[in-house]
Each structure stands twice: as structure tokens, then as C-alpha cells.
Amino acid sequence: MDPEELRRFFCDELGEPKYRADQVWSFMYKGEGFEGMSNLPRKLRADLEEAAEIRVPEIALKLVSAVDGTVKYLFRLSDGQKIESVVMRYKYGLTICISSQCGCRMGCRFCASTIGGKVRDLLPSELLGQIIAAQKDMGERISHVVMMGIGEPLDNYENVLKFLRLVNMEKGLGISYRHISLSTCGLVPKIRELAKENFPITLSVSLHAPDDETRSAIMPVNEAWGVDRLLTACREYFEATGRRISFEYTLISGKNDGVKDAIKLATTLKRYMKDGIHVNLIPLNEVEERDYKRGKAEDIKRFCDTLGKYGVNATVRRRLGPDINASCGQLRRQSEDK
Ligand code: SAH
Image (cartoon, rainbow, N blue to C red; front, side, top):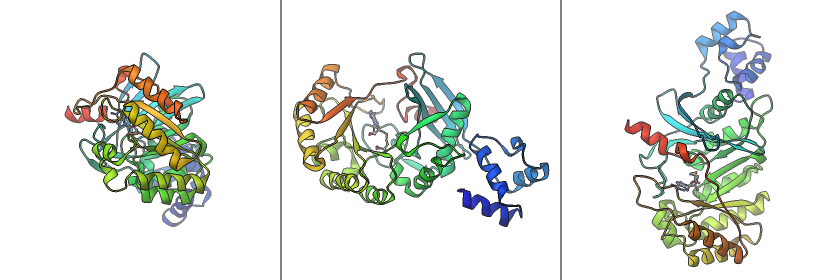
């Protein structure tokens, strides 16, 4: 519930004064149950127990990387569904990567999250709950959020929008929009809608190929909106919001990682985006069920250097948590197999 819904709930359903809602609000974001809300009368706590439900996802499994301290959570939701979140430690603080759906229906060929299809969308409470539960468990503030876990956030648009409004609120999690990134495989109409909201978040677009032929072979979503429509929407997003878009490009050996691909990528992006282009290169994380391979380190470097030579700023994503299978979707699948 947002603050207004919560106030209405206290007035209309429980016949309580509005300020009770504000008292409950801050406890909610600490991951506290009703019994722990010591500033509420005992009778009210009992009434709340009857009338409402308050919970965060349960930790089903927690893995801590011995290499870099990255923490991966497998969370169990109230209906038994499982999702993953990863907490990474950077110089500027803790970043959590959260899931947006149970499974995914986008079908990207190289991705583990989409293999079993989509089961359901996550609710705003479950999006927030991943942060609240992880923060409580770590005993430290989480300051940055990336929506790059399981699922396609723009395929769960209404819930994600409500989440974005709530995650930012003071006395709740208070996470600045500038510390939030949302990654999409490119649902063009939703990118347009999001532009109208004008959240100062960072939009990341999973491009992964410089042309329709290459992109359609690895991302079925490209059949619906090809590279031209996607990059046009990206340009319009930038013009409307003033926020730079970050492009993700997963390098798959022999599929999209040649010098020719790099040149085509640079020239194509420059045609649409004019300036401020940033490409985030992700060396493929090999997925057992898929045949795709990660390229050699020198191929990855050559791709990155070629983009630079053609005037496009690119960085290679650092791999965190290599010993705990920290890339998205793989743990959920393993737990389902069991
Ligand atoms: N649905 C959103 C968020 C997905 S995950 C999106 O498509 O952007 C975040 C990034 O990881 C995406 O760019 C996705 O394409 C990429 N990715 C998925 N599986 C991968 C793998 N096996 N290796 C490397 N990157 C992968």
C-alpha cells in the first residue's frame, strides 16, 4: 500500500486514527512484523494480525562469495515460488540486484531465467521485500538498486511503477532515483510510457546485436520491435528525460562478438544517439542448458577497443561472485530441479 492507501485502511477498515498508518509505515520498511511494533497498543496489534498480512520474502538459501563478499539470496515467496537477489559491495555502498518476475517470457536464447517461462509477476510488496529482507539480513543500508535479476521489469509495468514510487519515499527505504537502474530487453511501447513518468532513474537497454538479423536470432522480442524502432524509442527517451541510456551487450562467441559487429554497433548507435552513448559489455555467463560460449579474453578486449576507436565509450562488466553462481536465474533453476 502507498501512504494514502494505508491511511484509508486504518480509517475505513479498522476505525483507527490516520496517524497509526504513519507509525506502521516505518516499521514495515524495517521488515518488522506486527508483534514487534512496540509503539502500537496490544489490541491494535492483534486486530492487525487478523485483518492484514505483513511479510518479506523468506531466505531459502544464502550464498556468500569467498572471493569478493557478494551475497546471493534465493528467496521463497508466500506461494512457494522462488526468486533470486544479489547484493554486491562497491566503494559507494551496497547494491542489490532484484528480480521483477517469477521466470520470464521473453525467451532470450542465452538466458537462464526464461527457460521455464513466466510463472507470475511480482507484486510491489515483493519487489520492495527483496530489498527489505536483504538489508535486514546484512544489517547494513542498501543504497543502490538494479532491476537486472529474473524477469522483464517492463512486462510487469504497473507493479514496477508502484514499486518505483514507493522505494524512493522517505521514512521507507529512501533510495534515490539516481541510484536505481532498470534494465529492459526493449518493450518499445513501455519505454515510451516510462519516458512520460520522467523518473531520474537510469534506463539500461539490452541490445546485444547491431542489426535485426543477429538480434532476432538471439532475442525473440526483436521480432516485435526491431533495432530501428527500439533505438528510435531510446533517442526519444533521452530527448524527453535528459537521461542517458546505457546499452548492454552480452558477448557471445561467434554470434555477435566480431570486429565487424563492433563497427556496426558503433556506427548504428551514433546514427541514433548523437552523444553520451555508453555500452556495457557483458562476457556471456555460460548456461548449462544453452549451447552458447563465452569468447576469449582477447576477443572481448578487441571488441571493446574497436568500439572506442569508433568513438563509443564502452566498459566490460566486472564479474562478481564467480564462486556462487551469482548470475541471474541459475540458482532458481537448480532449486527447481531438486
Ligand atoms: N529483462 C531485463 C533484465 C534481464 S537481466 C533485460 O532483458 O534487460 C540483465 C542483463 O543480463 C540483460 O542484459 C540480459 O540480456 C543479460 N543476460 C541474461 N543472461 C545472460 C547470460 N547468460 N550471460 C550474460 N548476460 C546475460
